[in-house]
View 1: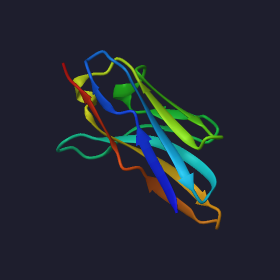
View 2: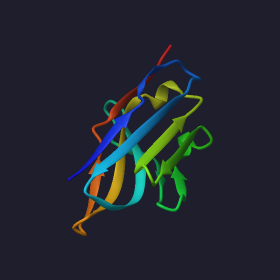
View 3: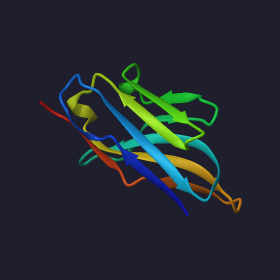
View 4: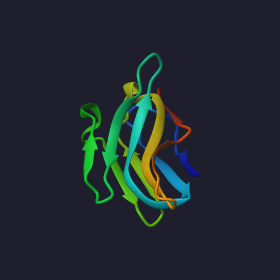
Length: 120
């Protein structure tokens, strides 16, 4: 089995910063793309940012220039640095990873989510 555990969420004032982390563990042979998604109340889950194994990144338009996704392949961990946070960034943030297990099976895995609240 594969587990993803997020950390780093919380309450922050507008204009503030947070750094999310997501550590992947279990029967892992290789992790391909990793990403962050978010789900605000009464809205569908949306892509925030993705990063390939080799570092190619992609961002949702509203977070470009404010958020930075990165990963440490040695630690099987993905990060999301969020700066200049706005109230509309408030959501539950989920990490995602495409994992090839030691048995050679590919799977799409999700973390349990971490709440980010931007409010004064």
